Image: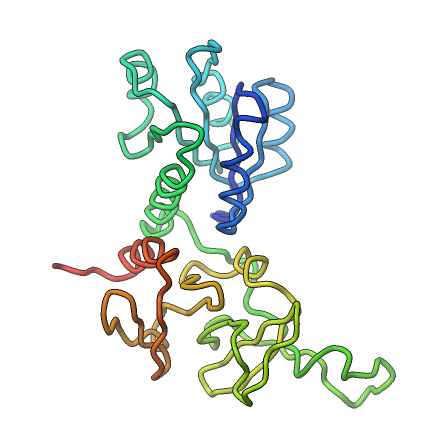
Length: 271
């Protein structure tokens, strides 16, 4: 079963202004948050249009939000995975949801605890993907890499190949860093290197690209997304440095937590 780990549905009775910080924070991490108000017709219509996403059910006892009713509705679309989110872990909340969820499927955090909510979401997604119960992104096999900047090609030249199909399994990393020739990459472009050291371009941002990559790719800094699968990933040199394709890559402080969680789901580390 295909599972899209880049988009999340939030079913809530809360006001939209309460969710601005969370929505912006998640988008900055490459996740898209779809906020749907607790109206049965709207939720059912949205679930039909957006399939195979993680659903957060916001339990707001103050607004008498019947979270279980939405759980039953979501279960009709059995490709969904739902998780309850509440600001207060009250006995009432535990009583109603304990029968249908495991403890690790609860998110307990306030509206503005964006990093905490993100950490919960990431752990849940990583666990689901790593368990083998949900498949990776199987729609895409790879990317079409440019042989250069688009403006350097002529639409009338039928002998040139502008874009080359490259499998994800062949790619070591994507970056906006300095090119191998020492030049800076042009704005709105990034480049990537393959296992046989070929270099290609893509006209996109790392943030946009990250939404379509397989699970074994990980953002480690503002300038790099790396392949954590073998044979590219050769090991950790220390807590902040990875060895990939015979080259060391520094993990920035912002991405250390995410990178370590990703490695834990890919490789058993008996400490």
